[in-house]
Image 1 (cartoon, protein in one colour):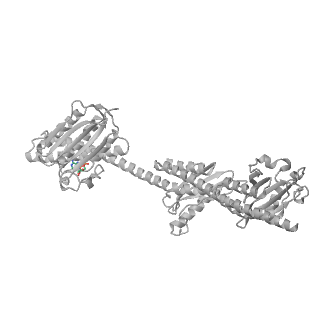
Image 2: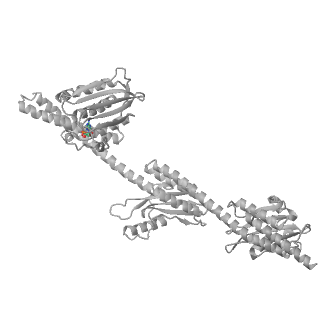
Length: 586
Ligand code: ADP
């Protein structure tokens, strides 16, 4: 009889071990939390043949216990209600004690169990036999597996707990992996979301170098990305003459325009560090800015402060506030934001400085232009009067000297006019009056003006403009100026007896005008510099000719201001073809 019992127990043990082996096999095939929890519960039910099984996990920070999966005997998931309802409620006390003691427990008669006496659910009409085993992983208890039966059905015995505990050891590792994977995944998703935001910010910052736009965008994203209610962004201004200390001025957010230096303790601290840096003692200064996270107190809101550094140099700071503490993720976002926008802020500031310098230059040029024009007009006028003999008879030699004066004044006038145009174009003050106008008449006007010079060099001029060419939409006097620049260059840079062709035709809804010559041409390297200010070729044939290298720059600006395009094709020694196109519609 005893032998028979022993045999039975052995065969039960044997078959249970086989089940343990089988159910353990399915674990670890997935890293998905829900799949893993389900696999564990399937294994638990198959192994214990319990009526119900539960997987409880403990939050490592809050120590809160939550049921993450539940199963009935048929292997069907249980709803929250089914798990918690009345007499069949999960035995939470047993789970808690298991977690505290870190050991498996069996509760055979819940009604009498001291541990469950205080629990409402233990006031039992339908007492249950329960078994609970902890999930150990890496020296910690991460949760527990709990199973139960109505006692009339079956009462759990110690060998079954051993088997469940053996399974739990393997399940714990798989669950821990899945939890870790979910955590990494979540961190990764929030990092990707951060990177996407930063890419969006970069895009917004890079499309515009306007200083106000850059600081406002930075401030806006700082508020949005950290969940702050209020704050400010301050930047260092150059120090006053005689003082070494830069001024920190708020450029976006609350109290915009205010100077901060002494009024904010963090500002004082950063400014002190900055002067240490100026004395070359700043080796310990971090190259990347880190946010300081201050908790909210009864009197003060929570505050997040970060210095803005460029290569370790302090250029400003961002301060953000809100009524509740900032999470660590807000500090991290701010660190990344400031690293990105610091450079954009510095670029915008440099750009602003360049713009101011440019404006000053433009103002100076327009002043000089104005001051030169008055004496030039009078030199030219009196020279003409003397030449015409109004002031008495003029000898041949005097006439030739007066002609030289006249030519040089004309050259100066052309230079002054180009400078004046450039300063007005750069300052956005050049007013154009486009109308629908016939190109042919402008070409004729330019050719009339240069006829004499072209004849002198015995050059041939060919004009090829169809009569039915539609009018162009452009400023007539500027069209003349463009044509004059290109045709006079063709004349200047083409040797005697060369050829110049002016042609026009319709191309892609625009009129294309070409000025082709058989002149000296321009090499590929120099073609890249054409149309820039003061460019003149190194070709000796160019230096023989008067010029400043401004005409083509003005020409390009005028064409573009009239919504046109300009370009060149040239072969050194054979000639050049300058083309430009202008619209035919308003
Ligand atoms: P400038 O003629 O006063 O030097 P431009 O701006 O009109 O100034 O022209 C700039 C330079 O481009 C010239 O100095 C010359 O080197 C080159 N260039 C312009 N037009 C021609 C041309 N038709 N053939 C050869 N080189 C030219």
